[in-house]
View 1: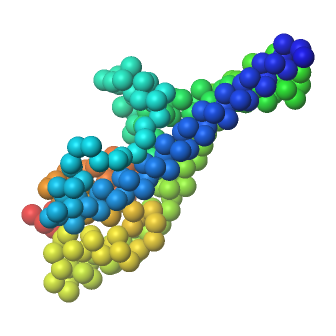
View 2 (view 1 turned 90 degrees about the horizontal axis):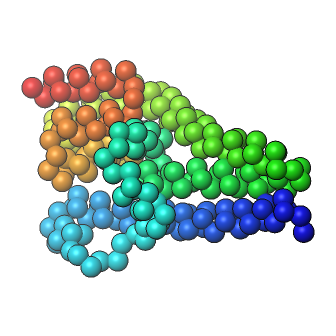
Length: 228
């Protein structure tokens, strides 16, 4: 075997192992987080159970957790976390950076295996560095466009609810129940945060951080003014 082929095979195996670990971690996190948020929002015994130490929870990615500890308090880490939230990717900063590393190694290995030269492997690694960013930007753009297209229907639903005698929280809850994703997902989060004791203004401010939309900014301002 040539050194290039050995490097490509080793990189491919590393890519496969890391990818399986991240997917397994994320699949567990989605189900457990949703379940626990539902318990908190329901109140009563569920709140106690959800906060009890020792319960089986999502298995974190060791690499992601290590990177998180190393990057704690860094400004760019906070920026990455905001971008992940806007794309609705259930990754923490460490896991995203581990995914970037996987993309670099994997793409570089594939290019080296195909071209059988180290130079193509380096070019593939550079491409792999940018691939997660491209995907992140694509997810954000598609999600923001879909959200903005649903705002008009959301406003009609909220206004009709308020006219029918609903409270502000009940009107927002109806958005989460009756409208499609992504706007239903985001307003379910708003309602869940409010049920956990967070003020509506703060919950809507969190929504604005996740959805960077000027139209939503006007809607949130209108809701806050209406409440006052």
